[in-house]
Length: 236
Image (cartoon, rainbow, N blue to C red; front, side):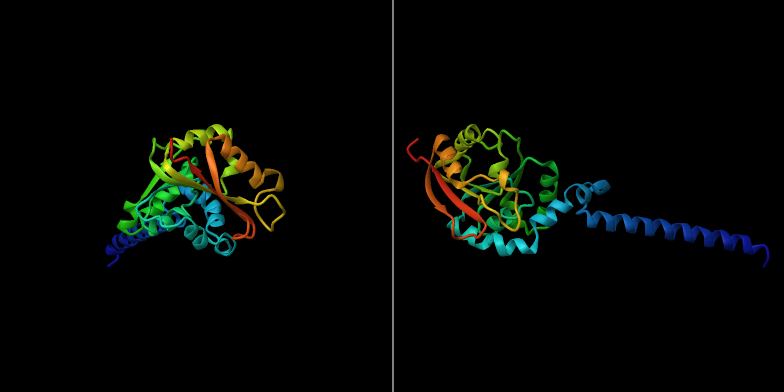
């Protein structure tokens, strides 16, 4: 019996090591799931905070996403570019409505986040969602690729906007639409500082210079934001 004791102890130690390794692996998996599957916590550390802000439950109240999507009209079968898509907050809603959506962002972490979320969507939704990394000065859209471009809380971050939108105009099909939703230039409970906001009159002026004509400016549907619709001239 005494000779068998060391062997038993070795087996017991071996089992402890195996169980410990399994537990370590399990903790790693949980950490990855917490970070949406990103290696080394890249997404969790680099984008999770932004994602929580973009997807905040409060946003449904003040952003009124269903109202915004309804204002775009019937998008089924249309190609919509969601420029500055972030987490795909509007992209997935538009895809559910039957649009083919190109979710565009300049942040690789946002792109990675959307790709990981897309992998969990139903197959029919995945088929309607394209995720594309753009450059700050180039939306990376092909000529006449889209029917509609949506920019939510994005316009003020674009540099050299007149040239940018002139370039974007080439990607919009004849008669296509640009919809810009951004914060009114007044104090609100949240949103960018006042100095970073752009009044809707300045936006309409810049869009006209870039070759669009203004359809509507809506300052009443959203409490903190305006909705501007502009069109690419259908004659050129």
